[in-house]
Amino acid sequence: MTELQAPPSGGTPSGASGPEGSRDGNWLAPTPPGRGAAPPRVRRRASWRLWAVAVVLAGAAGFLLYKGIGTSLDYYVTVRQALADKTKLAGRTFRLKGIVQPGTVHHQGDIVDFTVAEGRDRIAVENIGEPPQLFQVGIPVIVQGTFVGSTFVSHEVIVDHTGNYLPSRDGPLPKGTSATGVAQR
Image (cartoon, rainbow, N blue to C red; front, side):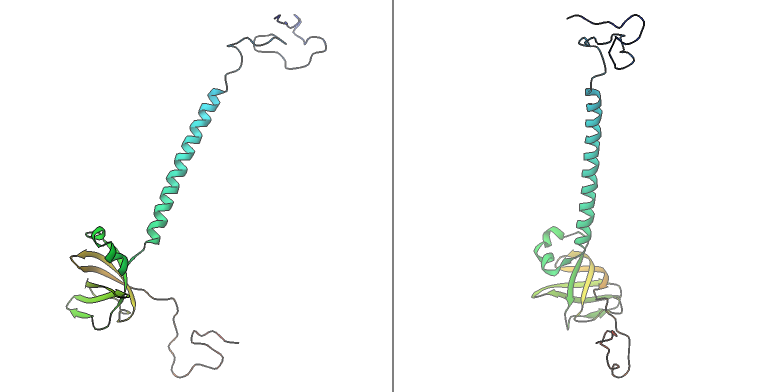
C-alpha cells in the first residue's frame, strides 16, 4: 500500500476536507498497526469497574432494606409461632403477642403473672414491673422478654389497641351521631 502524504504547504490536498491534521502529520494515510488513538479497552475497563461498584452498592442497599423491612414486619411473634420455634427462641429476647386470659392475672409485689393465648395455645408470662394502666383481662398485649424454661419472663408489657377512642359522655348520644362521634346521614 502506498501512503499519501500531506502537501508540503500544510494545507489540505486539493478537494479533500477533514481535520486540521493527524498526529503523525499524514493526511489520508492508513494508520499502521500499534499506532493511533488509545485503545477503547481502557475506557471499558474503567466502565466495568464502575458497574461492578454500582452493583455491589445496590446489592448492599437492597440487603439492608430487606433486613430492615423484615425486622419491622417481624415486630412480634405470636403464641403459636413461639411454641413452634421455642428451641430456636430460647435465650433470645423477642416480643410475644397474645390475649390475656381470664383468671390468670396474679400480682405478687413487683411481679405480675398471667397467661397469654392464641386459640388453644397458651404461654405463662412473668412480668417484672408494673404493667400499663390499660392492661386487663381479655385484651391483646405484646410482652418483651425471653423464655426461661416454659415461662416467658418479661420486662415490658405493651397493650395492643386500636386507634379508635371515644370521648367520655354521660347519657345517650345526640341524634345523628355514631359511637365514634361522626355524623351519620
